[in-house]
Length: 297
Image (cartoon, rainbow, N blue to C red):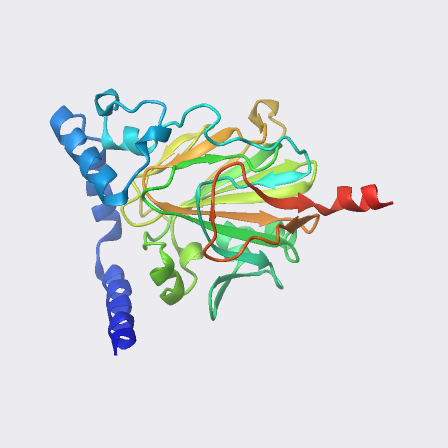
């Protein structure tokens, strides 16, 4: 009986999101989160820390008065070495703190979203030619809850070839909506970043969601939720200033969301990876197969 009630609640929760003015609510949320009124932003931060049991001890600055707004706190920096990055050049590390929602093989260009649901890599990244490079590759989807650290870091040293902001819906991206909203990640707004590395190309996608006040990258600045159907494409091929070391910060979310990695078949996922696993920036999530073959020979 309780299972049926839970199922009905989940369906109502998802159904309501189809009806809500997603972009309007997110813009209103952004205004509140950017408020610089001291008592108000401290009030929001205090409630947030208590509700989500945020580990403030990890933050570089634990004084709430030091943050200019709620968003300033939400995208807070951590203490040096709070997220150690392995120096193994053959290891690919997690780009974000969060929970693995799905991972595994990309089969005939399709990624698993949830049990019984899949979607096309070409729809996710908006480019069939690039998607073909990962037709038989791997993927890792990481969900960032509100309490998680919300800066995104390089999983491998590499060069940014191009990035593309794709406007879209702003459905919530938790486990409930992922299991009930078809092609969720290919429908929501997202920033698609294509990189080249010594272990082949990889794509990092930052997916927006309900109440996310914006996605930021270090090379472009802020991308705010909008209804425009026009993609913001920036070709930065050959720009050596956009080469990043593994572990370098490349972007951030202004509320909980999702990071998806598309990897070439030159990499194998770590055996420990499975849905529900909590991971942090810097943890090894994949290893190079090419170097393993070389070493074995």
